[in-house]
Length: 485
Image 1 (cartoon, rainbow, N blue to C red):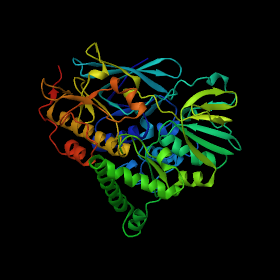
Image 2: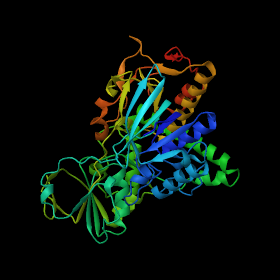
Image 3: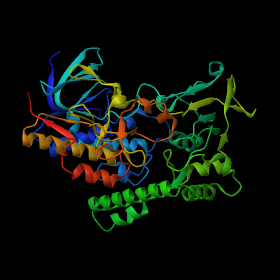
Image 4: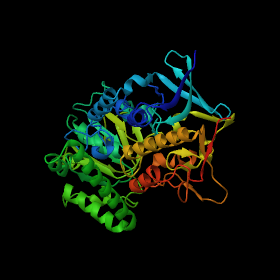
């Protein structure tokens, strides 16, 4: 097959990839680009996940794009509304015309002599399509789309009911009038339980240990008030900054005063569930706030279904499965018609793409992240990895802006490629993510590292990243800029 050449090749047509397309065609209008998407639809995460109740895990004024105001009523939005927002954005700006669907990227090889990436993508018909580009931008997310994580469950083969992972939820999963057990204590479980309880006979959320949960308004009343007095654009910008600064302040409070933050969060759960509920057993984690991601429940919907008796929380360990359900270490038996394994994701960095630089295979775990976007010793490649303590899109927008800024700088000064270099003694290596969550700990050894100081530090701070990526010099003495051979 003939090779297609573009200035910038974007991998992934989800929230990040569509945003990258907008920034590229707006900020670098003279450059060509294409987007490769392995699936047959726009939307990424929001098209893949179809389980009941799927919604955003952060507010839409920050999860929405910086360039396109979120006009929906809900601050914590339903998944289908987010999907429509992403697809409508792609159509409105003509980004959908740049997408090559059914192209799963398998490898990317850089040549310094040619100053080009050669990218191989497998098509639906099994053929390999080849693309070449000056700059490669990975917007493929951070988890494996093929399968979620399910731990070894003793005796699961003897269970007579249906077992489904949320990542593989299909329309034929009939839970109406059924007894459902949801295994897990993360954002997915907290989302599923209220949604399933609306139709199921009873829902049990089975967790090994508790997570922090906070009730937040489903609608932002302040945003509603602002929107009645100014334009949608101005209202969106003000609300966005309000929420950015508010979430940053709360994160810093949790880090500096963990004991006080823990008391505040637990008090909120007690207020939602009542004084007679055993909050100490079921909603008091052993770790400090923000050692793992905080789980939000809009308008306390989880608390309401628990108080109504439609759902319950059980904190225990699974001993084994049998035909009728699960036996727990405590001796209790949970009867179940359906078991939902909301047990996490399989983390996959750079979309499992094999990377080579001048014929040398790249071990991702040996790389150092530069400015939260590029990597040591890898030319002309950037990857979007959103915040773990805030909305994904806040970081995605900054990375796309920075890539465009770098591309314009190289074009203006006649450079062909840029590569970050770590000099001996410059920084100390640190894990790129310091979360204690299981899905992170299972994969973090295979991730690139971060450094102990800028520009190698992965800040969890939007303002610091904005200053560093938008205003500090591109040619900073760390980024090597090369002319074409």
